[in-house]
Image 1 (cartoon, one colour):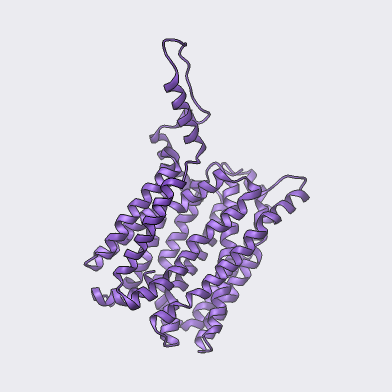
Image 2: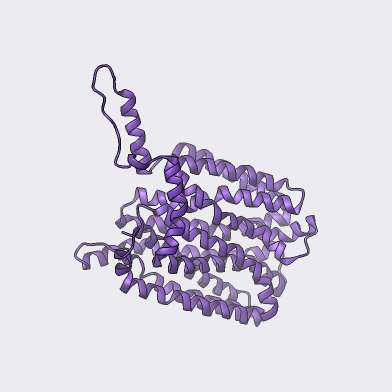
Length: 427
């Protein structure tokens, strides 16, 4: 929601540097890289629900503070601290899905949940543009805080604990308390997870595990880099839409913000199509494989996704360069959104099913990479487009997307099982 209001922020604090101005938006995403690395391990000690709720309160406090910021430095610091709290769902959310759904039903759940962190940055700027035009940039933060309060209240009553080791440990503790030491002989009550549940051990292992996964697991390395590129492209387009439609097409802030709808249409449309088909495709290939399911059966939708993305980039870049009717870059934006969400959902589901016991750590590893990309891409975008223009700039992005994305589903379809069998962590 901040991107359309950056001109007001620049005016309020006297910011003249394009990189610093972009930083007011992307520093929030930088915190997304850091938060999951310690929030994921904390959820394995104290439970997913409790950590998620407390992280949301942390986000709420600092997001309200952003609206009261009196300097550029305060705004950047508060944005980063708010992002730490907001990042909890990136790693813990994947753990919730792994806990609650069996593989045959997990695809639709992941498809819906994976849409949220991508659709949010699309819907937010539309709302933010109109808030910025008819009010002030400070209400961009206060309005999101009001919504967050409502969500938090609902979560207090609805969100329950799902992490098996924590649930079993709580049950064991209730049994210990109910035992009468005088009437029955002493018996140790423990769970299959009890042998190594001290917070020191869990934190030491879990803090290092995301980096160990990235260092030793080709699945996390290749798909993590591609997911990082997808996330970076999303944030690059989010921050350059105002440049296209306010700069090239000379539209007002509010009207230019409406073009985020095109990106949203691509995200939602492809997400709904994939949500309806992903589990059916999985069951189909499972039945052809003698009733044995494989994580690789989640990858077919990645093929059209890896093709739609570069096509969309080319359309956006060259139609904007040629000043064609505004509907043309919007069509390209829709294709970009469809390509991003299809590949994003396939990668997330594939990783969850490859690393079910360490889902939070595996997601934290790819979240770290993708959030760094989401932070960095908007910073170099202004310089790239100033030097190359929208056409050549987006052509470079399209070529890289094609080279990274197209081989990935083929490689893991044919060699994924062999890679998993040689893994220390994968199933």
